Image (cartoon, chains in turn brown, red):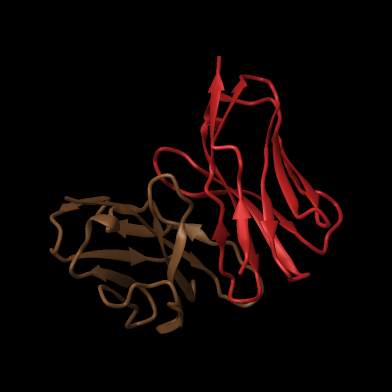
Amino acid sequence: EAGVAQSPRYKIIEKRQSVAFWCNPISGHATLYWYQQILGQGPKLLIQFQNNGVVDDSQLPKDRFSAERLKGVDSTLKIQPAKLEDSAVYLCASSRTMTGTYEQYFGPGTRLTVT
Amino acid sequence: AQTVTQSQPEMSVQEAETVTLSCTYDTSESDYYLFWYKQPPSRQMILVIRQEAYKQQNATENRFSVNFQKAAKSFSLKISDSQLGDAAMYFCAYNGGGGNKLTFGTGTQLKVEL
């Protein structure tokens, strides 16, 4: 079974530019998560999807961050415009569903550097 | 809101020795799950062990075991017979209140020395 795929692995941009990250979850997993992990901290949930609907985006900075999962499979997270404090690793995870407690499987992450 | 605290930023252990990583959490819920994740330099988060709060028996997975103290809201990870491959950042995580969402601690960097 293929794991969670993410691209790109690394991205360097200047502040005020835009950037997009892509995630393809494990086949059949209905729930998809995006986490932000700032250096020296644990991952923080940005947004959670169940199929193509948003379950929780309470910690997503909506003035600059957006995410979509149009067909309920892969997902894109966008930042526009980027700020220096957005430098972090962006982790995507998926789980079979969100009812009960199912293991979340993580992708390798995208390391974003904003200069 | 639930919080997870890991008070040890760094720990060191000699190869083949035992080390214990600490974690405390705060919650008002009675039913929840706790996890330890390992994150090597590759950044891939790997589940090490999980504990259901309603189970009194501590979880074990080969060389990894936990000491779950529900009343004290404490959840420590013991690694026995430490190996070089155990060197990584370890995160304690909490899942409760529905929605299958994880709240992570700040992590403990484990170094394994020859």
